[in-house]
Image 1 (cartoon, rainbow, N blue to C red):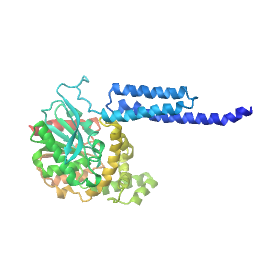
Image 2: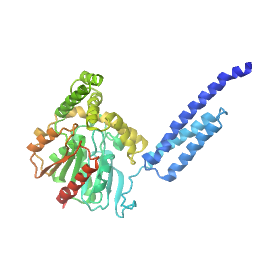
Image 3: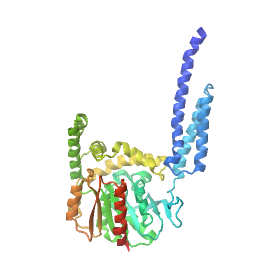
Image 4: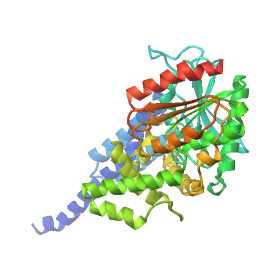
Amino acid sequence: MTTSRAQLPRRRGNGWLTAASVIVAVVLLLPVLLLPLTSSVPLWAWLPLLLLGLAALLWLILRRRRPWVRPAAVGLLVLAAVGAVVASQTLAVAPPVTGPDGKPVPGSIATMEKVDLGGSEQWITIRGQDETNPVLLNLGMGGPGGGGFFNSREFQPLEKHFTVGSWDEPGTGKSYGAVPFDQLDRDRFVDDATALANHLRQRFGQEKIVVYGVSWSSIIGIWPVQEHPELFHALVTSGQMVNTTENDRMGYELALKYLDDKGETRRAEKLRSNGPPPYHGDNVVRPYVAFLDVLNEIMGTPRYTLVAPLIPFFVPEYGYVDKVNHTRGLINSFNAVYPQLEGLDFARQAPTLEVPVFFFVGRHDVNAMPALVEEYYDVLSAPDKNLIWLEGGHGLGSAENKDVFVDVMLEQVRPLTQ
């Protein structure tokens, strides 16, 4: 009996150590298990890593009484996890352009490649069923720091009619380390976007291209179009940003009223303690996200703090390092670039654009305020300008809004390229 009592603490210690080892093992196995869902790693590379990881986990569970098994099994799981990270980075490719039968379309293009823009290597994807189609340059999603690989999926219905190039801007995703953050400014984005437009023109032998931007990248869209209209058939935007400071002040007041009306005192006091925008300092993303999350709640969309880390995990062209860098890029790019937009006002700074313009505007958007877009539209002088209303917010997520977008792109924008 005395011996049994003496052994009890040791057995409990071994039990806790085994349980901790199993938890660590499961965590290490996750990168392997998620490879087929979050990357483009082929089966031949994934299966050996999976078998190695599962064998190590079973070995740990079944032979747990042998003390040397725990470190050996965990070591094998570390090897499998590192292999998953390396495979996700080195074997990443752009998924093929497929037809209704799910098979790659003959003669289609689906590439992911580095291009030299202003002396730095940055990444783009190019997708389309026919390389002779007009080129559509997607400047990326919101941010700054959103990149273009995630929202490239929105253009799949157009890949039969356009060759779509999507850009991971410097400071995000696969282009995370392309340019130091303290060098990200208006001139850098204009120069790089212009260089990319010229690259696509030359590669596909076209005189002009169509350019698309959404939210933050709608700003990048106007800048090069204003300076180099000869390169573009048309400018197409969604969630057009016009005057970021006024837009944010309106959003802040709306978020505060919404919280007061709901009686959410704690969240309202947090906004009041931040004060109204614009914000300054080394971490401006924090006070901006505080009220932007409320605006997303008003629109019935997920909060930024939830969506931002999840977005890159659904981009098959991203390896695990890219996925982490996308989230880091959203934070670092926003902190570096957004304060520079404080004086932005396109109604004064870009009252004339020398290309046809198409603004897709969410009727109930409280992120890019429709009132400011309408004011800009009214003063804007362009060869042709169009204000197309979408239901809900500025995104193209709903089937109805996607249909409107595709119809306009095919019936009004594509004829401009002929």
